Length: 453
Image (cartoon, rainbow, N blue to C red; front, top):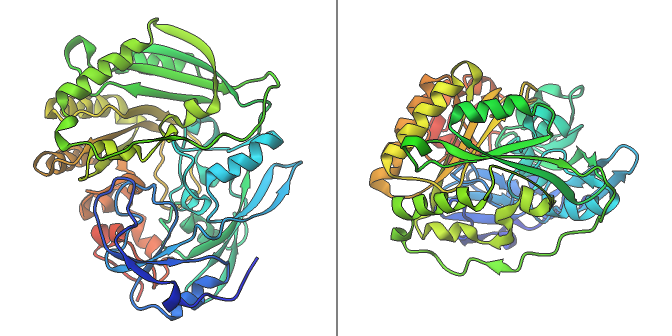
């Protein structure tokens, strides 16, 4: 679908309202809505300075921000265009949310092939950050399920991108952080389901050796992920719950999910999240599962999206916001690297109660700048305490580099240029595909704003 371009001057408003999910850093920007597939080149002709396409702002750091720039908000392009019920291939505009895709797909017996821990991200954002989920070992990352998309550049040129057509643009755009152009529409290959239900197993473990043993014991489960206690030391060091799931093989209810009704009402005071309170929470969470092994049937919502049940849950970190640290360390150094980093986190006193540990599989990502690599992935959130948080992030980033790993741009607020360029040595090749009018605060921070001009 297309429409005449909007008036960029009428559509532009100066506001600091657009935030990343971490609420850090806080930057002013001009928000420019893109409502139609034809809008992008015309809008750019009327704007000064750089721009960045953004969706729902669920990235954590500054990859979705451009200080004093123009944020091209794509959520107005949210139309479902075509669906092949035989193949499960859905064609939709890039601003559609994964929540809307699920509302359409689940009643028709389909589900997302890969999903992150929130459904409130856009299709274009999922491609631009090549998101991953609990089934990486079985399905790879999101880009592996995108047959094609249209990429529009600021000069008005349009490219149909697929593994066989404009293939270099295809690989540069998957995981390309929104810097290669605007995705107007994309195809997504859904996977069939028979029910909303998930057959779930939860198994307590004590230490990384037990985590790795459980991974070996259940090689054929589609979804595996672990919560790990990052606060405890001694005999409770690296204890956690190994969580496994599969879509139910029994036919059952297929209907859209209700809208969430709970809202986190206010910003928590900064002192509320401290080592004592987080340690207490982690102990309660671990012992909430009263038996070492449990089996039950869950709805897919609490299995995939437990935090989506509470709107604005990021307020629990206070006005300063939060930062996330997320790495992937290859198997060669995964065990020793994970133990060393968990010890450093426990020693710091900046414990996290939202810590996720899982394995990445061998399916290669299609994106040139994609984050996943086979090995162990750890993700955890820290409240911002400037004198403590950022020195810790620098130590953890250097440890990740020493163990041959990499950090995830979509979740980052502290990666140094030296770290980024070591993690992603292909960045200079990627620069050749960057749209000269597009930029982000993340890109400026880790490359000095290197441009093809």
